[in-house]
Image 1 (tube, rainbow, N blue to C red):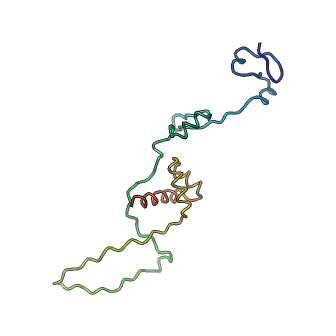
Image 2: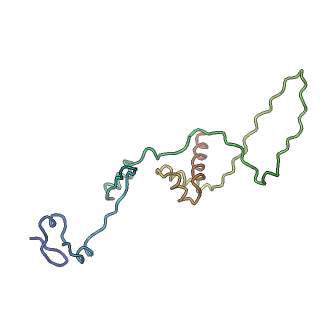
Image 3: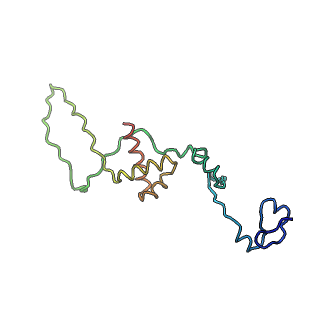
Length: 168
């Protein structure tokens, strides 16, 4: 008959198949080891939770449990952004030089399209690199924002701006 390694009492045969200690509180506290759990899938209906062991760590590292829906967010095509308001407020107005009025006989020349002004980025290069790394790891914009200390909107803009620059 198997005995508890702590107090020496006899173990039930079924318990002895898996454990070498009894159910006494002192024996439990001394011998029981906690397990690290990892959630690999969560939704409204159910959660999928596994014990984090070497095999599960290898599977996670290989991307086996990667959520395909969270691989990216937003659009990958650049959209025309509205002009940013002036930093000095609404009192400052842009003034165009007066252009000569065309006569009826000459065709109206179309002005050349103005080059877009470089967008003001309220984030650093380091934040941008981290945001892209977190996005590739599958973090949502709100999770990225929390890690970077910015708003969810800014986290989304960081990732989208970096993607658009990479494509262009």
